[in-house]
Image: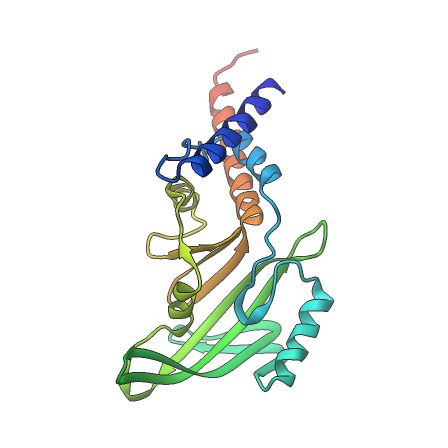
Length: 234
């Protein structure tokens, strides 16, 4: 109990110090320690930031569907299928049931040069077990550009509407425990974390991200503890 109080106090001191002096570095946090992660989860507020297409992390399943109907009424093309077949260079994959957003896309390279194309985005929502609210939105994407142009429409717009991910220690831990890869981009918007590669994009509540990390860290700790005790004789 005392250890947990000390951890929470250190986190609070780090946050207060950062607010008082923006140039001052936050206290380094050990993301390989499950107690540190657990205390962070309890102290981070639930994100209510906006995701792709205007979804928010406080939506439940019913509100998620209502928002899709709203988007359709606004003229956006969102198709539903009980069995979506996704075609890529790797072949055909059955994604199961879900919604597919399709749209014309464009990126302004210079004031006189705009590249255009067509994008398809398969939406995969994940909800919290406790409150049944949207905790994560994963997007499988396919973008075809006109005249052999090369672009990345969704990532381009994410960069315009988010900030650089500032927690380098957490980023290292996410790579170490294979939640993100070396080549992934990672951004933040409030308590919302956005990461992805050329095929996938994930919007995730920071608390959910830390919870996913916590599970992996606890498994690692159990393995280490087991290794320590394997030579004990009875």
